[in-house]
Image: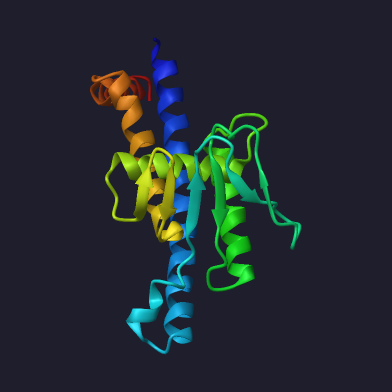
Length: 199
């Protein structure tokens, strides 16, 4: 791989890291807003807080029963096939507006993560978040198994996942070439020397 390829890869990964950092900040803004709204609504009673946080539940079972989205009072129906990213339900949380803003941000994050064609980007984000939380044995999961479970505080869990994705993007160029930093320093030194000789 040439120096230009390394530099382009490094720049691309830095841009990805910056994007995940921005997503982290947006999820943290939602988290802070959620905490303020819950604190105000419960008049500071911490025993009532846990039931107000925005949560997401998943079902990976074969032929799950689900509520039809966007059609109130339609009732349950049974899916013939479980989507590869599971069936996800996001509860009401502190308000309809808050839930809608989270879902929009989760959809944007799913697209940035590389949602496959034909999949729901929000479900893809929640699926990958769930797998990350499982892998890291997170306390943000409740009753987690291969058949499904619940993400207890989906906003803060999403922010944490974004930080992990940011770190991964920053470290990836270094993993592909352990001498990357030395090569970059040498290139800068040679460029500076060349500028002194020519200039």
